[in-house]
Image (cartoon, rainbow, N blue to C red):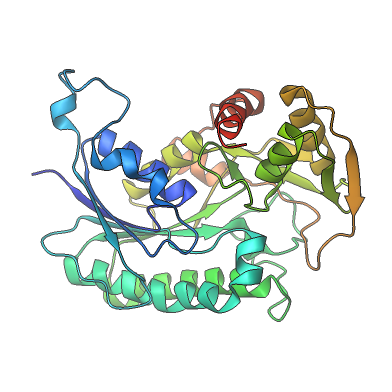
Length: 325
């Protein structure tokens, strides 16, 4: 029998790519999303099996089936039949989202994680949670290892996301230790690629949207703050490697190539052929000054290595954004 995977937040940017890749590998996928920040356009093609291969291909018959359920996972989650994996990806995930939706962000991190863990426990399924580099806050350690406990302001405007994810990690480990559930925690660093929202508010979609319209490209702060950008296919590869592993402690998945916000903005302006100019605005409260993953554990334990160079990933992302502008 095909393995069955439940993915919460399946209509989101990363959730939809996870769904597509797992279907392509022969898993049956049940996608759950309340569409608060997700979009059915990201998964519409999955229901029709319109994936990367011709339907006459010998491999086509091994593709999985996709089922979508519109549901708020802060409420009880019911799925009929066996489930082998539960991947909990539901959450607002950009500063614009969690500043506008602070209560839903906290609820999905706490109640949603509790309900998703309950489903995994009831089905004796492997549980994988999408955590984030934001658990490190504005880090005092660089690069950030999984052993670093972070520098987070719990009452600042970003605290609703940071603490929701930190609580979700704590609950996940409690289910692992107390109930013996096989759980995985992936700490995701900045990721980009097709299906990001134009109004996402994160650096790559914001810069691309402005550059493709030849508008001023807005940089918050002086642009010297750093980030490390991972193309979405590399991230998905790392997530699935972790899902299939025996590891239970948190693991960073990201690309250790570090660059300044100004550098990524200038790269996007150059690659889009834009006439945009850089403009500067005040840095938001608690915005991290540095961010770079130490991926030693992912390399050693999972055999993970990011493969897509930044410029190559940006080409694919720009192509997608051109269709949306």
